[in-house]
Length: 266
Image (cartoon, rainbow, N blue to C red):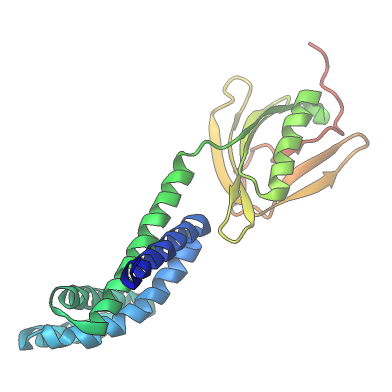
């Protein structure tokens, strides 16, 4: 096997390893990696690609730069960042195409390699996003909480499944029916894995009077679970530090544990 073939095989293996890393790491890694790759690609492409542009292109660049400065002064810091990002991004794309079609030597190879790495990053990250969107999330089951925290053994087991998954950041869902005298509420909890090996929790709740238990609804995120010990025989897990207050009148987000009093038979 010749050295050139071995080199190509080595490149393919590296690209496959890179694609696997991007697929596993998630959007946070993809964003940082993209910015770093673009920070390398932009000066290489702009420096090498400008030899293939004509005078009118350079004049157009200068006009666009003046327009970007004016827009930045008018719109402020955020507008400045977006404007210059679009300007540099468009210029980098054009110069990269010119390098691939007309360039020769090391600059062309470096530009092509960086674009291949960026494309692999995009494909792998897109595949990871699609997979996460269509993959079924394990369902721990349903639980019910009655007046005074009454529950059943089956409810406690379903809730314990969810709490165990929450402790290890394993995506899962749990439905909790909170049965009150004046209000019925249905919570749909979910463990959502984050990119930094941690997780947060969401709750989509519908609630209302017994005559119309789905009259109102609310959704919110919470970064943590906490134990709450109440009256004798009552222990519960609650979502805490929720971003966005639960709508007025909604039942408190409670996940039952097996220390609750049992539901009455029947």
